[in-house]
Length: 245
Ligand code: ADP
Ligand code: MG
Image (tube, rainbow, N blue to C red; front, top):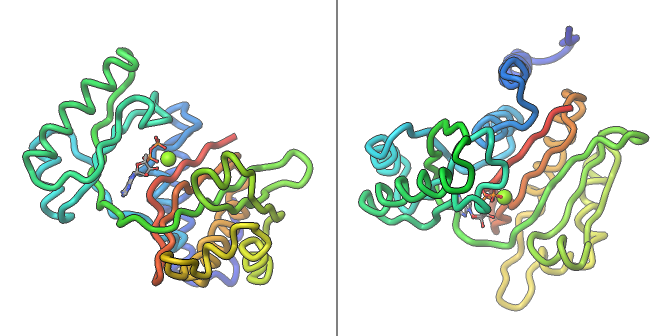
């Protein structure tokens, strides 16, 4: 039972929706949330994500793409496929209904080839986020320190150069600011050559909201917002993963 003293009505509602998603995942015996579930939780915590809609067939995919606006991205939705691109389950920059229909079929075919027993829920149609400086926000539950936040720049900066910062949650605004400034690659966020400066306040707000989320839900074992596009104004999470204990 959560104590909701002093919370505003909105926040009470938020907790309920997030709790519902987590209970649903648990009742199905799953530990990994689907991207749409993880993004729905992000939205409850004011973490900006790409708009999305779950299509169950080619027809719906084309219809939703039209509603969202081209170009769109299509992604496989399956509890058995965690790394979607490894399964040929991501098609980006689809510019019209014909491309969407064709991508839908290809994604399902690739998923079947990757794991013929995989349970397919459908295909997620989402807005295509324009390219920008990519950042990563993560959280892991450390056995000793508890919920710990991670920040870094996308691609080689995290994978190759291990240029990341960590802070134990909950973090303050100053902590969030330091998580950026302590990176070796920090100058890339303040504007460098042809790269415009990123909206640092938007990134700080993602870090603070993620801190709140993992503190509210200690059952979250891992969280991965990767990548987040960091724009001159605002930011947008393109992929979200949440794993429960
Ligand atoms: P996974 O990590 O499960 O393989 P992602 O959702 O991260 O799948 O998609 C793979 C890559 O495709 C992303 O890292 C990103 O470069 C690109 N991508 C995915 N979704 C979008 C989107 N909505 N807008 C722009 N690029 C995207
Ligand atoms: Mg990803």
